[in-house]
Length: 294
Image (cartoon, rainbow, N blue to C red; front, side, top):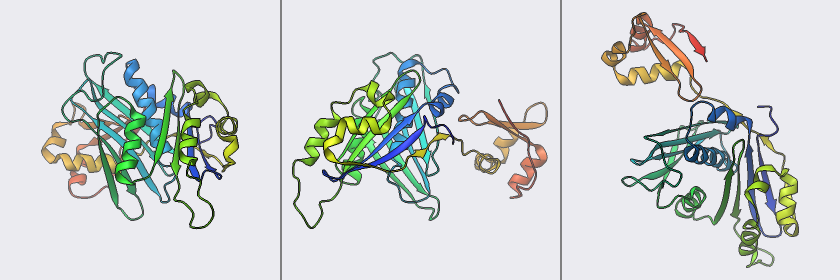
């Protein structure tokens, strides 16, 4: 995680009592999009979802991950993006036929957007569901906060051929003491509406925040690096094979006497020979298997 072009920047608009997160991805997005030949409209949605997955981790206070998943019977059958507390991102999309430029996320039967938060320490898993009623991903994420956390939230997302980015604002509870600025939330929302996609994608973070909110006394915190990183492992693949059942795992064995599983996120290949498979179903994961990557 060393590329300064990929970062998460938290900030506070002190005068308005609004917290914010800015995310920009370049190298990590390149690594995700090069895993498959995505049609342009699918690529744009995946880019925005990847930026949003990082954006939504900006205020998480525990070790774990946040994933965004959309399943549909329409042209886009699956959209998935995930970011961990460590700043590692991954994502993929699946589609059928060739989605037209104007295809709608709402096509299909009752498509849902699922946002899942997993706490690694406690093992707890929380999932919020949002009906997909339009093609505006940013608005769908705003509705998630409205419905699940009753937290006024504004989100802007942008993507081009090489970058993706997002900016999120959330209203903080009013302080018990002092004068309450009743116009603050409306005011910062109007300012946010002036941002262009090019500014969101290219301006240095502090320059962008000062351009938008210089009258709101922005306080900028240290940025956090982001990078592509897959969470696949031998143990997880073994668990997947076990869940398939012994007969189906055996059926996956090829002519060379091994079953091979390729991770869709990072193209890493895992090979399990028959001895490995027998040990998996005996609960013994001690045998080393071959791990190769493209």
